[in-house]
Length: 328
Image (cartoon, rainbow, N blue to C red; front, side, top):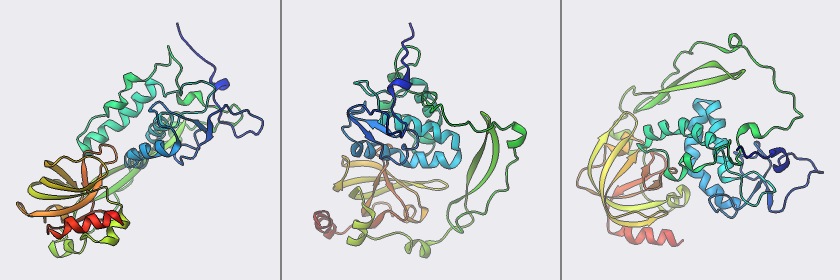
């Protein structure tokens, strides 16, 4: 038997002064979500007690969201709807938060999982398994069609002939040396609207060279420690590296964890470095002081970015020096 509830009676999202707001609801503060609906309610289904905690959770996915927004606006809208309704549940008179429908999760997974696999060699997070979410036919849940204001005039639908275009020419490579990327675009027709689709591919005009590289990555310093907000610092020995078009995997053995936002085990692990400048200049069997950031989506992955990382040959002073920085 289908269990349905009129969401127009449950959901509060219109900015009307006369509309009563159920107890416990708050004005939406998250920029990515506030134009979907205006009010949210906590705790959410992940037991986050307030918007501040939920924001820190949704920011784990921010790089993925930005990338999807760049390549396909329609995909972006589906992905952000899932994340917003999951972490910032819409205001309602129900005691429990209204979760996104299973179909909403499945659409988000279909969009995001290939990207996660491509860049991080990971699968869709198990804690977001879509079979954990309610089905619209048998339970209360939310999907995009649940939110309508009933007052706005819908935009006139476009025909395929008004939208469809061929691919533009590829742009110039956005980096003059070392791996970069080039892009092109076209417009397509989807559900009565014209959507812009971007396509990117890697390009590599020439190597920047050792002299160029030495000027491009950072050495550890207090001002850098404060500015870059590193989430980990380690003492590690470079074992081997594997170079790809736009990044390098460096296999290291961690001797000491100087500081870390998330737990890091000593022993063998992999660093993901988005610059051949940094990656290819690490020498096997040499010890280094390395500071970088945890992956937003999979915190166990350690990332060194060209402009947001610090690498230097290991010296005993680093253990004491970094401890002082962390206390300041």
